[in-house]
Amino acid sequence: MKRTITHLADGRELFYFDRQDDADRSAVDKRDLPPRPPASELRYDPLTEEWIAVAGHRQGRTFLPPTSECPLCPSTPGHLTEIPSSSYDVAVFENRFPSFSAQPVEYEQVGGLSEVRPGTGRCEVVCFTSDHDSSFSALSPEQVELVMEAWIDRTAELSALPGVEQVFCFENRGPEIGITLAHPHGQIYAYPYVTPRTKLTLGAAERHRERTGGNLFADVLAAEREAGTRVVASNEHWTAFVPAAARWPVEVHLYPHRQVPDLLALESSERAAFGPLYTEVLRRLDGLFGVPMPYIAAWHQAPVNVGRDLSYAHLELFSIRRAPDKLKYLAGSESAMGAFVNDVLPENTARLLRSVITD
Ligand SMILES: [Zn+2]
Image (cartoon, rainbow, N blue to C red; front, top):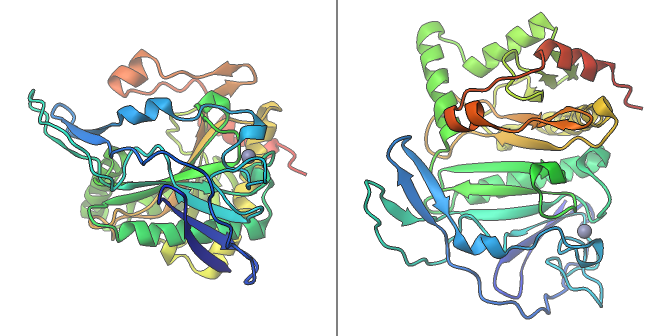
């Protein structure tokens, strides 16, 4: 594996991750780019004790351009993109329209019990493949391993940045989810705080440990493997199951069998075993209704500074599609109260996913 770092015309960093050690990544970004936008500002919501990032500049970002204008394809003489090289395996670069960044920002305190501070952090884009028409589910095991190397490399570096408290690798897939670029890609957010969801689950994990002495996530995985009714697929190192209290009509969690705080701690055999199982699960999702499944795939990793001993790295994958022609929208109960109502029995979802013929 070869890692090359270079800079785009406006100073943002770009990383190539290549399978071949002799890959030539000397191409230079020849575009004339405007200066980078200021960082966002963070506003504190005293009612929920959560930070909200306010980034006015993101309204102007690129929205579903035609394939010929895709900014994530390799550059050609007539079409210069975010990736100057004429080819790549995996490429990662700083988002041009970031929710968090190290750029300076001018802001004022706004009163109303809401503290304001700069949205320090970083947002990166991960291009999974140079093939515009591919998808994560179609990647080879070797290509998934390279993506995993990129996630690990970026998690380590972003965790070391000043002020960063949590690193989140994820993929939004499908126009139904709200993606703005069709090219197969994911994102990495380096947050300047521990996210609400992580705070909540680590609180539960702490109480579980006080009560039982065990690790909450490990105990959930063991119970799901023993029950078996919601297991979708597994191999030597990973198990994929529908959680017993799934919120979404389609929801699958993938856990390594060994408790690790983050992807960095996975051994090479565990890293290698992830791709075959995950792409199988994705193909089962696509096969469920016979149409490409819109989804969100979210890596849960330990925060940088707290709760590392309680954490258990895993992937949570879910979709808003509940039927071939129906989407679940987050309406009153979910959006206003955070109280989920799922119209699909998790055991049925698991059974249907198991019955999909994948090849
Ligand atoms: Zn593309």
